[in-house]
Length: 369
Image (tube, rainbow, N blue to C red):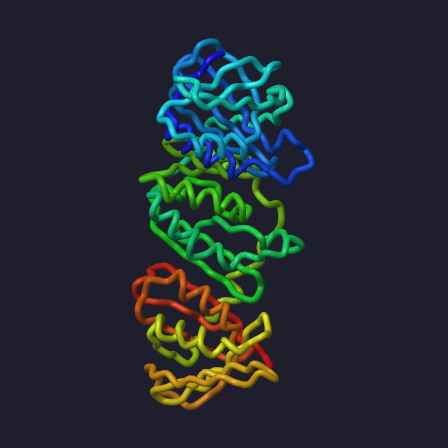
């Protein structure tokens, strides 16, 4: 069997595949890429049993066959190759040689049996909708940061994909903060999202990477999988089974104290007042007064940092504590130059919105000290 292919096209698909392959699994086959060679092209597949990806590319193929190669090592070899054209040649039982047209550089990789590779679900007939890649990338960027990283809280470790009043909605929360975004997407009412589905964090990160490289992507839901297809491949993500919390119940319905502040100035001030902090929560006290706020960060035995900042607020003076990291995470994904903080009490979350972030809402719970 002999396969002649373009290095750049091969590398692009390999990059996606090796990101899905599970290098830490005790099952060696999960760290491989399944390569299926047929007349006219290749199919490359990888899975960690939770996410599967299948990509295709054109190539000159002499003799058909299927074999598995170590995904990460194959990617590193192809990435380092200095030639525009690559050749894969050999038989499964002997190993696969990777070389250039002149044979100046050559590698031989041992082969894993193709029949040991887990089969990916067959996807057919699912309802799909198209969404601009830029839109989907931005929606994931503005929500996924708030998902729980504690695997014990399984239902919170993913991204809720749902719809609200025929708008496409993504939601993430770890119980201390929440991020939500709505966008108009034609046809979203046709997807089975009445109750919402939970996409795992790793899958959401891969979907974001795919969306960043595509003008348009197609998304759908089939049984227990979230499906994303692009011009180069198909990603299948096994949905998280569990109950996502009733996030609507924690969104304040009544307006609190409204504060308007320059996003970047507040971000930089928060970074400065937490320089002495050794606490992972990086608690900052906010003392609001008409036209200003004083930020105070404590470093315990190291000392204390204070900074005064001008802002738009005309109400009664009040004080409240926040986790600085949580606020900084929100500000980092926003576009608005000026943001609104709608602050209720120490027991209710602060609402954060901005005029240049349509459909976006972030909640951050205050902290008691």
